Length: 292
Ligand SMILES: [Ca+2]
Ligand SMILES: [Ca+2]
Image (tube, rainbow, N blue to C red; front, top):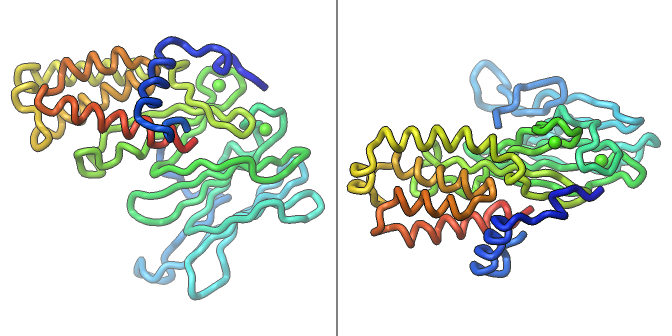
């Protein structure tokens, strides 16, 4: 299935592609889960939190296929397995990691080929990282289609109610961007899976970004521009720095690079402007968008 976003490349996107080409050849490339019936996780072994042990597990049947997550029976390791079996019982996909979840959208057609997929969410463990989503076809040619790795959870939603799922991903490339983890600027990437390929479709959903842009502008105006420009630098006023970065990213990820750099130039101190602009571009072009 080819969709309209493959046929139309607006001027703003061509400018973005140009920016990323300039930076180098590699340019092109949530919410916490609630423990449910289809999840394997690390739980407490006794009354205290440590030591932990793999717990949970469950099976889901879709079109004759069986998707299962289960704890590994091994006292040496804390681990979970996910296995997808064909109607004949053959293993068509298997993976293990610290935690496993069968995403609730499993059984839907996720990639537009008219056949259902299983979506397995694997968690590596650790305070801030990492999740991998495995997309497994349950159709005529069953098996792994592709995977998506990121530092944050992915939310699945049919944003424009056209029957095709969009993926809302916080691009982990901007984690710790001149900040602590909790103060990292948020960069929303909206993706769609077409066959085996992910596409950045943020420019189709500008209204979603516009809500964040209004809030960012409101906050920045409330901070008073002379104050921002006076205080801005790499070493102080982290809140203002994060807000300007987010405003720039909201325009950039929604396919409006001219407005992104106009806003950036307007708010960011001239002293650091060129350095930070290059850093933003580097992460935007060589971050998650380059890995999809
Ligand atoms: Ca499909
Ligand atoms: Ca949709």
